Length: 181
Image (cartoon, rainbow, N blue to C red; front, side, top):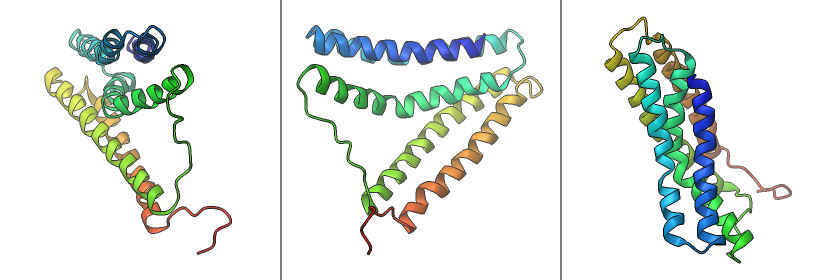
């Protein structure tokens, strides 16, 4: 059930975003658009409540329960950035807005962008990890929540790999093709 709810929540996130942008740019309803965009965290609250309720009612945690916390961490850490990305493109396509910058970055600029991406990943990890930890403490049954702890371990490993890749561009900056320095 939680796996399907994650999918529904992801769809719900984008429905709120799209509805907010349509209200803002096509119907010129700024306040309604802002309200719909602000509603995107409601999706996370529903998912968190359903996950905790499922576990509190005796379900043994699975990786899917852990992914629910991961999803929430990522949604909070990256949500504003995703909405901003969609907003810029929607404004360009439907409201004669400025063309979004799609130029690839190289050198120091690219290295900075990769590091900032990793910092955002750390924020998602902290939020998701705190949720996983809080759920583990709340359920207070290590055999029931073992999968949540394993999810945090795997995510921590992924975070380390992301660190190595992201910071490698600081030591070995991406070069523009055809330019030898």
